[in-house]
Amino acid sequence: MAVYGEKKHWWLRNKKIVDKYMKEARNLIASQDPNDVKSALNLVESALSVSPRYELALELKARSLLYLRRFKDVADMLHDYIPSLKLAGEDSGIGSSELSSTHSSRESVKLLSDLPGHGDSSFKCFSVSDLKKKVMAGLSKHCDEQGQWRYLVLGQACCHLGLMEDAMVLLQTGKRLATAAFRRQSICWSDDSFILFSSADGGSSPPSSVVVSSASQPRSLTESESVAHVLSHIKLLLRRRAAALAALDAGLYSESIRHFSKILDSRRGAPQGFLAQCFMHRASAYRSAGRIAESIADCNKTLALDPSCLQALETRAALLESVRCFPDSLHDLEHLKLLYNSILRDRKLPGPVWKRHNVRYREIPGKLCVLTSKIQQLKLRIANGEIGNVDYYALMGIRRDCSRSELDRAYLLLNLKHKPERSMSFIDRFELTDDEEELDSVKDRARMSTLLLYRLIQKGYSVVTSNIATEQAAEKQRKAAVTEAHRSNNIETPIRAANSNNNTTNVVKGVFCRDLTVVGSLIARAGFNQPIPVKYEALSC
Image (cartoon, rainbow, N blue to C red; front, side, top):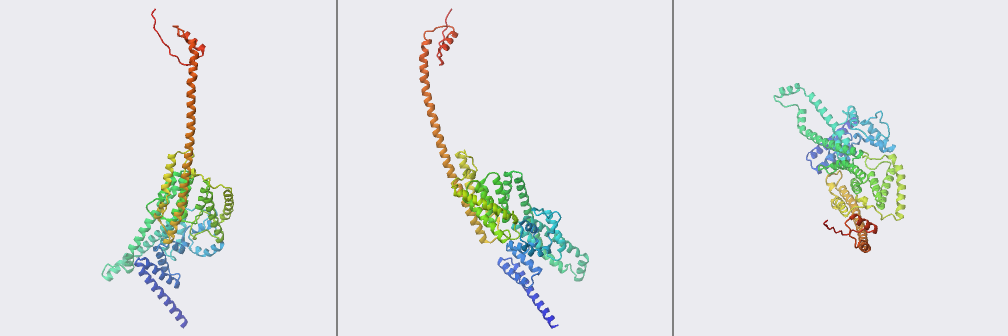
């Protein structure tokens, strides 16, 4: 009995400690000061160290991280609830050890149950309706055990991380669950309870639970309104991206570029990860349209936002190789090779587990072999001296026989668009999810890549200008030679005409006849081809 009393006292003591931490954390969070929220987060983590499964402490921790804009920490904390995580894990081919370690936690959620027909390993895309069904199927089993706040908090975090489809599914699910909970609670408040409290207290005050609900109602309405605004913005971005991708698949590259530019140049900010994907898609559209400089610029912006983007490195290397800029292309391929080797060493794709990639893990060894052979070929071409023969015409998007005005127009547009001073402007419109140090590194990467492209454009303008000047000088010399030849021909022609006139004058001299036919036959018989003045006289009969 003494031992039991000791255990009971120990349990009560821990409960009091947790309650004390939670009360202080609530008071600090209510002030909405970032420093106080950080202190409250430390208190919540202390409470979780005592009671790791305390639901209220988990909710306060997630909401504090969301308030501090630590969206990656929220996603890492609640990654089991991301609907597309299982599909992303199957596509990336994570190692068996990682899958076995996370298998138990994911099976407890059951948000993505295996469906017939989806067992194909090549299945990569997914629909929002399927995700909704899977999420709702998991909620119907675990609605009572697990809090509904997870879906609203994680949905907002996924939106800021660029996981738009997951964010839309989670936020819509959270709204449905909140509406259903409110309806169930309103049904429990019968008219009898209100009459009972009115007659007993002599007033019209509702029960304490109703007072608490009414007091917390403005906060829930504010959250619901913010969720509604986020959902509308997500749907707008997804519609525009779907239209741009459809135009890109149909070969309407200018239309696709226009739709992507609406997303990227919008006044309202968009998540960093989502915009990195849009930059990459627009780079593909620019490449298909033959606008090499714009495509390289979008690849630079993608790599500034996401340095481990494999598709951006591969695309930029191919673009630089197409204009015969082999040293820069080799540099990108070497960087890509290092990333492939790190992936094979770590047995996982770069980034957190919830990050999406356009390549699967099992494709990396084959890509590495192809990349190694391409690097060897480029090194051989550089060793043979194929360095300075850069195709600046293709880089600037002009014809081989372009005029000076066309060159100046193309250079002016590229110069205004890719100046290093304007390379930071696209970052100000984005919702960056990282701290100030990461923001400075993003700006440094964007500045360096833009400076390299700008110098390449400047050199291309000088080279093409000298080529046009050389062609114009050669054209002038050719025209001068032709003019000189025409002059010599014009001088020799009157001399020959004068000699022929002297020869034919003796033939026609002294001929007088009224009949012009006889005169014409005499002239033709003499072979005279020059015009002669004819005098007509009227004679009387």
